[in-house]
Image 1 (spheres, rainbow over the protein chains, first blue to last red):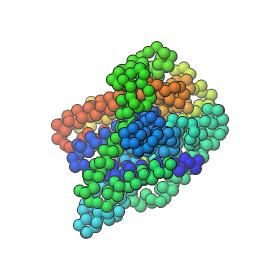
Image 2 (image 1 turned 30 degrees about the vertical axis):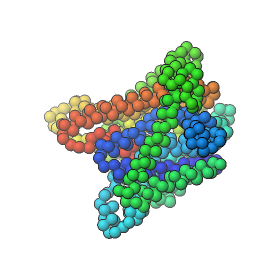
Image 3 (image 1 turned 90 degrees about the vertical axis):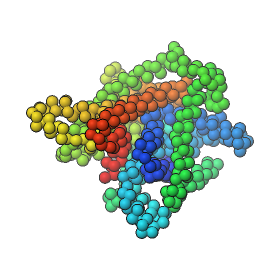
Image 4 (image 1 turned 120 degrees about the vertical axis):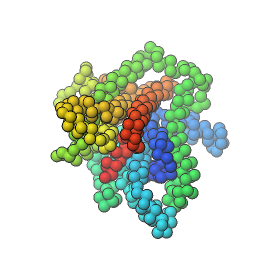
Length: 220
Length: 320
């Protein structure tokens, strides 16, 4: 349980770190609308690829003789022998989860940033604010609802995640999702129901905390 | 050991984020462009590797280095008569049929919901959030809950034609918010004057709907249906616990990866599903581009073609 919460928080944080610059680039740095839409479709397209296939696609990348190890050992000679810990590890799971769910973060932030009022930014700039200050005091607060929605999406979905953990974790790493699934297959239905109920409770608390901390009602 | 990896990742990620925060757009743009390219590699790299590895010769392995590239061996393998492949093909055809039904349901429900939400009605707000709720429900929980429900009402999962009902149900629930948001964005830009004109000219409400409304919004309906199709085709977690003996393609893939010895046919199978998905997106974009242009020519207004991105309205709707 603790692991699952920690993993969800970690993945959510990484998704913000990765997703925000991407959304920012798409929304504010790309000039023409056509190009923007094209890039956005390119970014969004993996969402329509089967989820299981996207997990499987990590096998040849992270495996013992996968792409990363291949580069580290044979091309760059950084390490003597393949790092077998790449696959079947929490790191691999985190990486795959970020790749699977980062789109849920990018899209809400993108639309929040794209509908941002340019006048506010220019006003701040005219009043002599440094870029850092403009971002902190104008852009970020205005994009907060998007970030929040993304956080809720990613947090909740990763909490309930089990196929990624099962395939990439190789049965050695547990999450509440795999636990529920295991209880279900035994079959120990009451235990599965109990685990699922705890999961729902934790997710509800998590979402409530997120909403409380950000005071979404004031922002919106 | 793992912590070192996390540390490296965090430091690397801090660079674009910091440049975005502290530098003016003109200066941070190159950094963000590079970051964006890395991101694209991150998103597509695994799929690309899988694609390359699926073109190996008969002695191909699951990992690098690839052997005898350029062969279609593992694709022809998909057509062989081994029991595994027969099962896989069976899964594909079942998936396609289920997706087709889900697509029809999604298109129909999205259309009626879109029509309903054109004006305020009691319970509209609650209904709106209820539809969107399924976006945020982890699939496993939905699957588990429904399987309990089926168990208590004495429903036998995956038996006969009735066995398809719960599968179609959960997949339609999953696809509905997307189709619904597409329809919402269509109706947001919809000009009701044509309808009024038709009504003034004495058309019945059914004739108005058939002759005026539907021709104007059919792209949206088509898009909603296509969303339903793709999402249902790729759906895994929601179907997992309620499918019984009916193995859809993603379920089959999961079973293969988690139980048997892996051979590159897993990759070629993955490539086939990716191609199907991208083809469907392509068809959708093409249709919306063509009709968008027609509409532009007709009313000479800009801003069409944006509506094919559902999550936009998802974000704005829930952000409001």
